[in-house]
Length: 387
Image 1: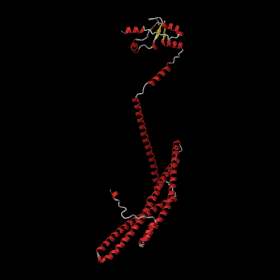
Image 2: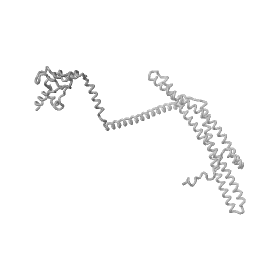
Image 3: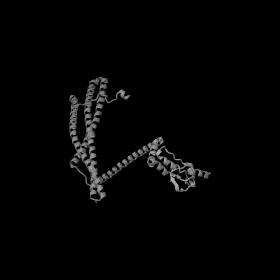
Image 4: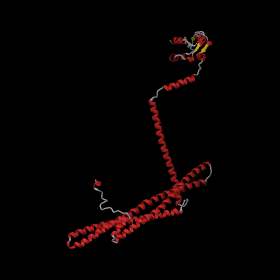
C-alpha cells in the first residue's frame, strides 16, 4: 500500500491556470508543458506527506515526464516568482505574513478568565508592593530613631561625666530656673488654699448644723428661748457670710490652678522640647567635630557631608525652640503679674470683710470681681438628670 501511495504522490500533477491576463498566455503555455510533478521525498517523510499533504515550497516541476532526469527540475518557488513578476506583484512574504498574523490577533476575542487572572495578579502585586513599602518605611523610622537615641545617650553620658561640651544660654537658663522655682512656690500656695477651703467648708457646715440645733432648742425650752434664738441667728449669719467667703476662696483657687497647671505647664513643656533639641544639637555637633578630625578620604567626606546636613537641621530646630521659649517666658511673666494682682486683692478684701463682720463689704467684693455664688443645692442633679 505504501508503494501505491508513493507512486500516486510521485505522479501528481499540479495545474497552473491563468488568471485571465492575455499578456501571460505564452508563459502559461510553456509552464503547462512541464508535465509532471515528482516528489523527491525519502521514505521516512511519506507519513508526513499523507497527513499534512504536499508542501508547495518543497515541490519541483520536472520537464520530461515521469522517470525523467533531474536536469530539468524547476523549483515551484521560482515559478511562483516568475508569475508574480509577470503580473507586476512584488513578493514580500514576510510583510504579508506579519499583516495576516496581526489581523488574526485582532480578530481573536479576549478570554475573560485571562483578564481576571491578570487583574488579580496585578492587584496582588500592588498590595504586596504597598505592604513592602510600609515595612521599609517603618524600618527606616526605627533605624533613624535608634541612631538618634544612641547619639543623644552618648552625649548625655559624656555631659554627666564631664567629658563632653554642651551649649549653654546663661540668661535663658536663669529664667528657666526662676520659672521652676516660682511654679514650686505657687503649687505650695495652691495646696494651702485648697486646705483652707476644705477646713472652712467644714466649719460652715458645722455652724449651719449648730444654728439649726439652737433654733430647735429655742422652741423646746421656753425658759431659754431668747438665748437659744440669739445664738441661732448669729450662727446662721456666720454661715451665710462663710458661704460668701467660700465663693471668693474657690475663685482664688481656680485661678491659681489655671496659672500653675495650665499656663506654666505649657511653658515648661516647651522648655522640655527645647532641652531635648539642645541635647540632639550637641550630639550631632560632637559627631561632626569627630568626623572633621579624622582622615579626608572619599567615604569620610560623604559622611561629613551627611553629618553637616543633620547638624544644620538640628541647629535650626534648636534655635527655633529657643526663640519659642523666650517668647513664652515673656508672656508668662506678664500674665502672672496681671492674674496674681487681681487674685491677691480679692483674697485680701474677702478675708478682711469676713472677719470684720462687714457683710456689705464682703458682698461688694464679690460683685467687684464678678463672682456669682451658686444657690444652695445647685450642685445636686435635678430629678430628670437622675433619671
